[in-house]
Image (tube, rainbow, N blue to C red; front, side):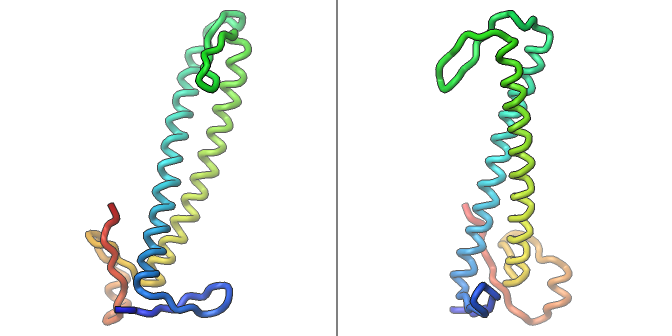
Length: 146
């Protein structure tokens, strides 16, 4: 059951078996899931930082506060902590933006791969343009990964 399909790689046309196509598609979907999970994790961290900054806003700069650094609770003052939390919050926002653009690029790559090999995921409806344009051509049907 080897459905060969050609792809233009760096060294010319290369034949992929159905198993290789399914494996690569699952790998792409896994990468998308990992990026999405990391974005969600960083967004949660950014929200925590925003709450801390909101709580520190009305407090005087010389008032003492505690900060967790590497699992160790350290006593500092608000004047020292607030700028570092703001900096960390800005860095988180930049990382989220970068990961979001990476996610969009990987999503486009996955969609292009899916269209190139006519991959349909079991349980998802077939795109209408694919039904009309490709009357009798066969594609690869991929079951949902757990």
